[in-house]
Length: 148
Length: 490
Image (cartoon, rainbow over all chains, first blue to last red; front, side, top):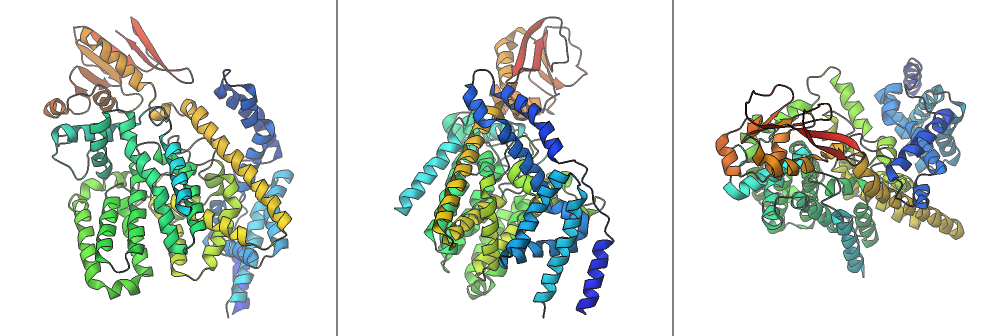
């Protein structure tokens, strides 16, 4: 029974089309976004504010981190996971996260957390979509292991 | 000692909520104005702007607002007058009082003062909670009364007096906000499921509480058609792919970008550049959730259920994610964060590594919080001025100073619903307005329209947006970021 379910689930995931996010989010887009944001924030602060305060809050490294976090966080969007691998896939994807955290599986946690970084640097959004599928499969395996 | 810390946290919460309350957000948006004028009308005549005697739903702009906030405003307007501070006072006050309430709630759930204090502190500085405590958002009162009701229920120990008070609190919460009519029944049903055994043991007391609660619900049942007007506008029921829309809407409320990076896209609901929660909370939210999921305790299970059902009122409507309709999540995120912080302090790792992590997290937290305060107090009033109808008060004050020179005053409807702003800022006598029985397009010498003005041979004043070019320009109104918002001429 478990083998049938596994085959069915793998087939279900593989037949799901690879979702490519409409919004590009990589190192290039992050770098491009910095100058206009710095200009925008500094304009809002105005000339009356001490420049040290402006630079403290609106410096390039801060904005880079903020944009990087935005791109990074985008890879964990539950909606993207749902649209990519469906509701069943989302359930097992969440189960994967739960299991690796509960079992303190540091290697898988490291892989899970570094996939978005890979997406940002290699700038191929398909990586995230493939990762969703692989993680959901592992989550499914964990689930089967729990079911007696 | 713990109580002293709680008092300090509450004072901090009060300071963050009341500091520059009148001027930031930089104007009153139309719902605040409507609540304010209707409360003023109740105060003067015991009727709303349409002449309805002590309404149980305020017709307002045809959306039939939940009545609680308007009635809460009556004493504050009587004390402070019809102004920004009075309109925002109940939201700020109840927002502040939610902090100690959360302490007592968490204390009861976890029986741990540290988690309770951390929950209160986390909520006190929460950008999400601050945003809705610093403006006349009626939804904030729902959260207060919901937490009050739940806390009283947990402390009741089969005592009828507490159960009655809990029922009254839930009843008030039900009448505090549109979404409460969906949320409160769902929440009570969840609580009833988790506490079914103890509830069944005290049937007679529960029946008394249920009877009292039904008294509060009855007006909404009687006026069902009216009170569901707003719902019919925003609910996804009847749309194509309703299941997919619901799931998508629901999941957006757990979006890391929404929660930790960008927040709600609606200008009144969050500060640009800041998420609904601070970034430094991310690891603690994860740890807290794990602890909650692993726990077998009934109260923890209930919190987890609350966490999962909280976005439902928001998910069945558009747009999503919607920070305001998901407002019942706010205390929960604080509790989960506190649980995460507490659990982290109990983790056995190298003490030097632990201390290093404490320092790193503290630095990030400090930077997060002061960045938020800078963005809220320095950027937000400039960036989102138009979302708060900034400039309208200044325009009306000018018009009021020259209105005696004109027979008619024509006002643009380009930005919002201007009649209510004129009623509010000119403190127009509610009795006269009710007798005029206006259709919101005209009262006194004021006419509100976009293009077609009724012909008039006498002297008239025109207030239009920046696009018009009156023959005699009298005044231009700019908002903070130097955008022309009104042009006044004749």
